[in-house]
Image (cartoon, rainbow, N blue to C red):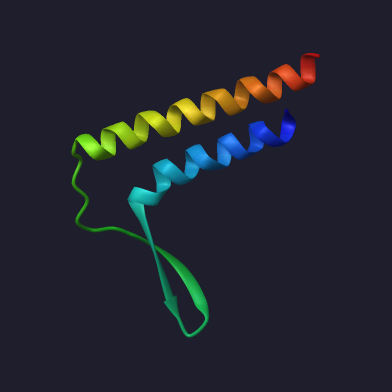
Length: 68
């Protein structure tokens, strides 16, 4: 359950931060650049809620592993 919890947390962070940042590759060097034209619409709100839900499930999964 520990691995599943970590995977859920990473998936949630990817869902949230994937919309805010863009990865640019310049001569084999990857850089994170914040998007300038960022529009908050229903798709972003749904993806944000899904990310929060995945992080919550991951935290509860890790707590379950530690308790039992």
